[in-house]
Image (cartoon, rainbow, N blue to C red):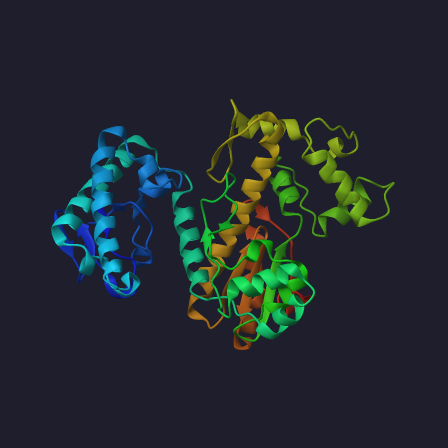
Length: 398
């Protein structure tokens, strides 16, 4: 049964389903709605927003329903604006307290029709359940605003313009990280406007970010995109050591440093016009592309369909698959930590940071095991820990 969520505030639970408003329970037969909500965690709901690739309802609405939808949207905005003009703080009230029931019913009905149209005209994405898990993790992360040492940031702002801008943006508040799971073509997470800017925080300023518990522990997948290429090539080689050192020792024997090996490999990997006979003895880009790229569309093994051109095809394939592979493990760890005092602080591309309560330190090897045991095979990770997000030192318990 299709339903609509009336309000996402914890104290404002309510849904519209089968022609009635329900405030005191979750019906057992609800199955489909527009957007994810934490109120339906674990219920196996299908979300039209995910079916449509994360597009807004206004962008997905079919032509025959647009006029009615826009009319009802206008009515809802009018009631909200009237409440604001009356000096009512809308965020402090439930939507069904502000909007008359008759108008709310009409609005929910047209939203139900749009949802039904989406479910009838779009295929269920292969990665639907993963995207639900990803939104759950993003929601959990947003519950813990980032703790910032104002003293450290103020000191840095005296000589660093970006520190000064961050200090002004925060204005003494601890803002949350609000991830957008549909913010990039490859599926890599981005952040929403007003979010703490974790994705582009200067490394030099990261010491202003401190844990709420005792210490940060950061897990990084080593050479994630390269290991993804190995997995997609069905190559049996999964180096236990650092992948760039492996290349230096086994492929580029004329090179003497890890950085040289890394630079040479990526110069070849993401430029389809480049040639490197030594690298091509170990890796075959063409075979991978033949398997996952056809008629301008990359189809990743983790369920994404990405339109692209020949030049960017391999880049998108590896970036998307590598990111999704990492995020799947991060979601597992997020659920694993729910009964502990520790929590996922942030995720950035191929790394995961835990805000660790020292009493949970015994589970760190298990967390690393979960992180490394991916759908694409075993991926080596490194572990760093520290009292702020910049000054992390490598640790090991093996």
